[in-house]
View 1 (cartoon, rainbow, N blue to C red):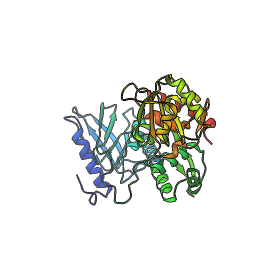
View 2 (view 1 turned 90 degrees about the vertical axis):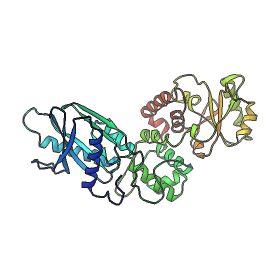
View 3 (view 1 turned 90 degrees about the horizontal axis):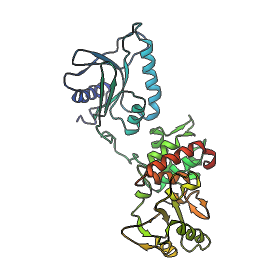
Length: 370
């Protein structure tokens, strides 16, 4: 692979990306470039000609960038499409397609482009090309992390207690607000907050004004992204127990814990919490965050088991799970923004339940967002 120091110009990026594309094309297919000399508004980087086995040709108008973030994509693709419309011939010949080329396209960028059926290619081999004439569909996966990311503190994930508090605050509190105001809402240090906001903005999940104020949060996409780094199943090893009299009895016992205050904080999450907002299916097990696991176990008279468990309890390493909790029949449950992430990482039908809850949250923002 070309070294990071060498791969800096857009011409090099285009050359390497098309080389990766040619490696993946079917036999007798070929990709080559010509400089953009067509009249009209398009003054892009190149026109890529894809030639099929019977000399059929398809054209792609390529824009090359050294780096991209999600918020760049909409104006970039719109500009290429405008150029395509402006230079379209009067005949019924097939119009060119846009092609986004970069040194590296992160998964959120590739997902954005794929959802809109926009062809792309990067210098690591991430490729997706779709043409109607000549007929071609090509998709392959290259690097999953930017091999050219420079030194410095990594910002490529949303792990850790501070990230949990920041994501939850962004989801739970409707903007606008400044980053210092977000720090107060989340209860997080300045450096952690600014780094997380920068990363989340780069991914296209929030929009800021010219003065840095958070203007809009794509909370559903942000929570789905956060589930890659956090969730009940990822918060630590969950201990498994049996509630001998079933989940209804367990909920009654949990309701009585509220007044004792001898067991530390707890919060029920996932399926057992969702009837507060959107009943999807009867819960088959209980998932509980606890500050002091053994105290909760003793108070609920649970039995430790290796098989046949219907209760899972994990220690709350990120105390964000206790932020903005609610009540269901006297039982403390997590906020919907936490429950949905735990469902996204739960086994079985957790993902289906998560989608149902996300749909409810979209229709009822005023019921849970502040």
